[in-house]
Image 1 (tube, rainbow, N blue to C red):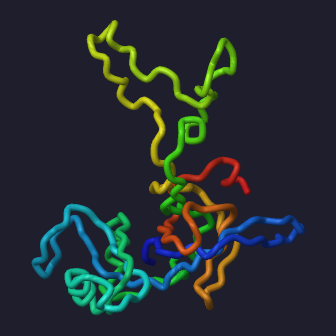
Image 2: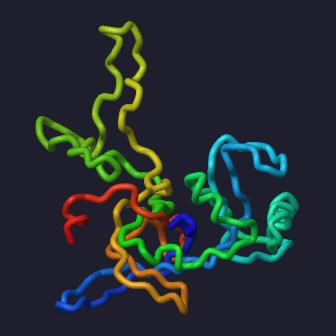
Amino acid sequence: MPAPVILGRKIGMTRLYDENGRNVPVTVIEAGPCQVSQIKTAEPSEEGGKADGYDAVQLAFEDIKGRNTTMPLIGHDHKAGLTPKRHHREFRISADQAAEYELGQEVTLEVLEDTKFVDITGTSKGKGYAGVMKKWNFKGQLASHGTERKHRSPGSVGGRSSNLGTGKPKKGIRMSGRMGDERVTVRSVEIVARDKSKNLLMVKGPVPGANKGLLMIKEAKRLYKSKANK
């Protein structure tokens, strides 16, 4: 059985009702179908191919017109017998799982048939430039003793000249800046329902990113006690 990994696209959120009548918020994901565009192995193949140093499979997702992509990607997909694809993502897998794949093979929602919890990786929504109170939950300056127009400021960011001989800010200090638009992984997300005919996967709760955002879905690495006991 191939590794339980697949690419998908976030459609949006809705709700389902379980057998006890409880309202369960779910995210609907269009999971696949994907195609195998490359297989990497830690050891050289019997045909004399070069070793990549690790075992992995690269999945391609969604067709794209040739004029909207690049010649290197067109050639890359052509080697696997595929038409040009929009997205390519790599998943680390074991050597035994890599042996289950072939170039051009279609990967559908069936790879998650026996999987109950998944890890989902996506790009979070970008929120633009944000101050320290919004980005880092700073308390802000107290409105007392003549404080004027400084209520949302971070306070002192330097002041190291006395002990280290430099007036530079401390490395890693939390300051204002761009917020969001980062790679985020949510772990041990429960699969609530599947619709194989429409390639739809329903998972409990929210997942990173905006609607139509690309998602990487794979079997959960670890289960929290509260979820494992369900």
